[in-house]
Length: 290
Image (tube, rainbow, N blue to C red; front, side, top):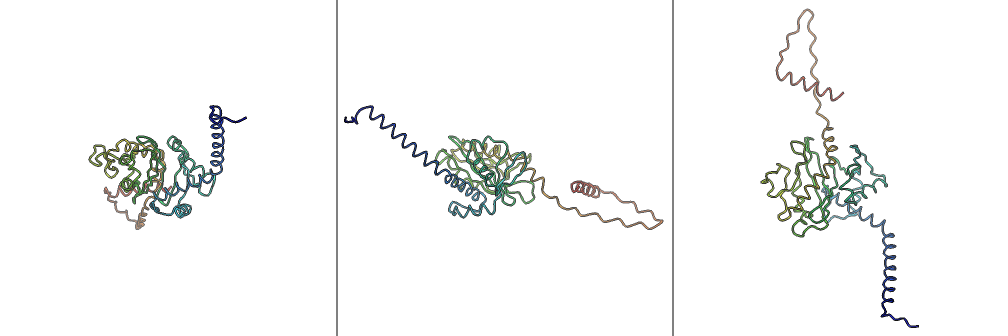
């Protein structure tokens, strides 16, 4: 009996069989390549971290940067305010990078936060929403010389569907470089880094912390501001605690009073405002050392 290839039944059966076969092949392929895909995703994430640290640029060799990452960067969790390094623990390292890859989870999680450290610089992952879809990136925060604040030493941002030539400009070096040197906390200890239309001319601008917004990309810039504040806000208590942990300057011990000559009454010490201030400083530092 000849098969009528033009019949509706034949076309439907043929289509179903082909869909099942192709679907099965794709599933097998995806499963077999899963480990390799995870390796490549981690490589891209590590490369982005090296870029935000200023070690790599877009033209750097990724494999070489990954090796430098392994040598120079500490991977850690911030859990209940505690800093826990996990470098060398493969299972925990994988958990960190899995969290980075789940942007929705990264936006919503409030504890067990991934963080990276190189010297006195912390790298914090960010995730948020732009005008059309997800935006994400990393920001590097380095302690200031006096140890009282942080400055942005690097930032890398990317997007899924922002408008080319407008909001999509957040992924360009021209925009990202504007953030370098910006002060993180303002005088009230609020996160001050932001993008505003008109830059310092804007009424809400903060000196040393405000970046010019992208012309025509206001909504995307608003998303960037929210992403920065929400993402870093989760780490704010930890970051401030590290500033508070800065070793205070040593106070020179006061000279011992000379023993009075027998029969003499020690001369009355003249008390001045400087003397009082010095005594207060010494007592304060002694209390810290204890």
